[in-house]
Length: 241
Image (cartoon, rainbow, N blue to C red; front, side, top):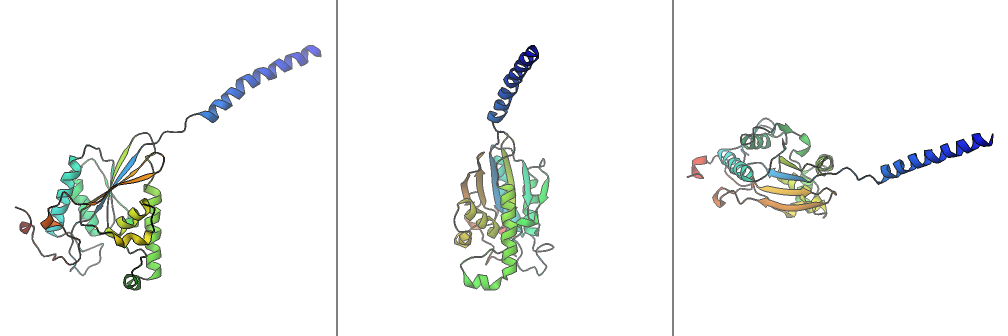
């Protein structure tokens, strides 16, 4: 009986020696390494505001808008990075801008996301607030917040990502307000050109940096537009040598 107890105690000690270090190693194992995700937010090019059709079947890019998109595509192509995705909203002007950009990046499969279609979030301007219903503004915020939560996260693995997102002025400005951690209602305090470039870097720890906002250095001043007040009938030859 004593011999049996002695044997059992040694067996228990051996089990402790084997199991406990393994458990300790499992608890202290290095967390899965994540990479940096850089998101390149592109505002669509100038489009035909006189088109009476809705924004999903009409209101296409005018020649100037196509030229703006080509200039932006050339700038993106000159960057020393490998882009990993191309997403646009479902609205015509964003889809077409993404198509122009995609010609220089045939390896990217264009995708569309209705969550980043143009909408009007709440702001401090009473005249704008009166033009929009509470339901529409709530839906706008819900869509943008959902996209932000899903996409503005570190790269899921150690490899870095460079994601192109073609969307709209209000959407981009709202997202920038969130990146800066200021009141999202301040989005209207920012001005943004057509086919400008906004760059947000999401670090592996989840912190974010705004690397650029509304950069239009690739577009000559006589081709710069903000959509409002521009004549959509102007021809490309007016702006290109």
